[in-house]
Length: 228
Ligand code: CA
Image (cartoon, helix red, strand yellow):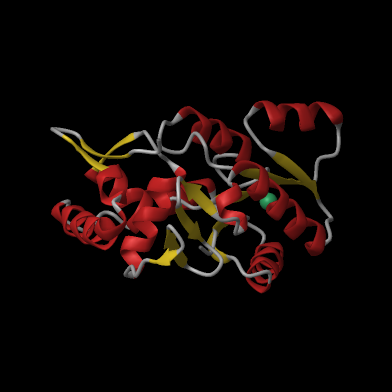
């Protein structure tokens, strides 16, 4: 899975520098020049991490970080703050607002990429390319391969993303709208019954291994992946 990084920076040269370096490091990059633009990007599709400038026109980066932490949907989103401020109290304020890490301008692009990787490894190890295992079901995000009891399972791209999401969020119940948001990203234009179609395909692909029973329908709510 290629992690998507939202870069929020109003200075075009710095936005470009950050975006290009993250792209070269293999990330998908979405850009925003203000907190308001960032909010609409997040509404459209949840990124995997945000590189957030502190000083933005209008709403500040700190205010946006606080909002992200306050909302259920975005609470877990890793944030790296980008700032020209070096004083200790600012650092504390930023971390209190919910930032996972801090990079002070001027910064080396290499260092920023290393920090992004480190935060992803800590907060979302599955995005760092490590294999995920549930019993004898093994999903490898780096190779896009799924094995059940050592036998390859053939999955379409959407079923692969769906299984990836389920395996990294086992035991939790998700509504169709939440699955569209998390797995499809841009959920606004897709009908909820699309989810059911792909759930059926996923179950069919897993049936020979018996793992299809892990994909449980929760009546009146949505779906849950049984991890035990
Ligand atoms: Ca700025």
